[in-house]
Length: 193
Ligand SMILES: C[S@@+](CC[C@H](N)C(=O)[O-])C[C@H]1O[C@@H](n2cnc3c(N)ncnc32)[C@H](O)[C@@H]1O
Image (cartoon, rainbow, N blue to C red; front, side, top):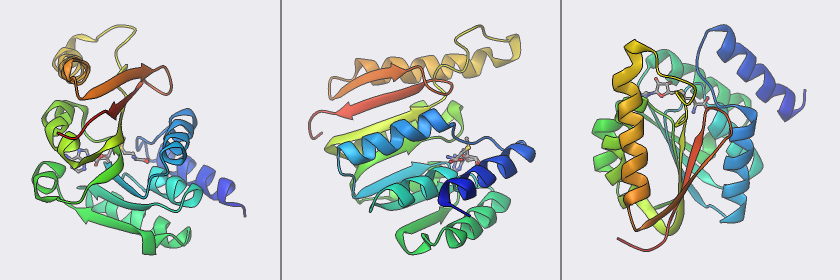
């Protein structure tokens, strides 16, 4: 089986369990950003079953640190990293990113923010602190409610909106939102902070 078929199988397994996972067009942007900046160190917040990390590790020579809090997904991701033969280049940190991010000190070239959307705004200062100047922050699903906000999701929609406002108002970032997947914010950190 080819790597692409294995990745397709991984996505199908995630979808059959109703596990959220990264779409192909978002993956393509992440890989192209990683290649463009020659990313050596990548941080992912929200590992899921490891699809994004596996795809990035297969496409580049980068090393990835990825954070996940759900035990079943942690176990699945570890199995998948073994299956793809990339375990030696990935560090899976188990726990809540809200506790882990403030303890991280290494600098990263690319950060993929793909955890609970309600926490994006809270995580932004640590993402900024952990990015090299010239590094790129990508945040998934930022246009989740572009075609309307269900009553029950108003609070979540507001959190995402406030995250985007903070990102776009920050003069250290050059940010844009790409219409891939459910909206991918791509923000380049222009200078050291
Ligand atoms: C959209 S899924 C991630 C999909 C994954 N990036 C992929 O490639 O398929 C979001 C994941 O983030 C995890 N998550 C959400 N909030 C988190 C947090 N605060 N800390 C750690 N993991 C979190 C969820 O358990 C879930 O597995």
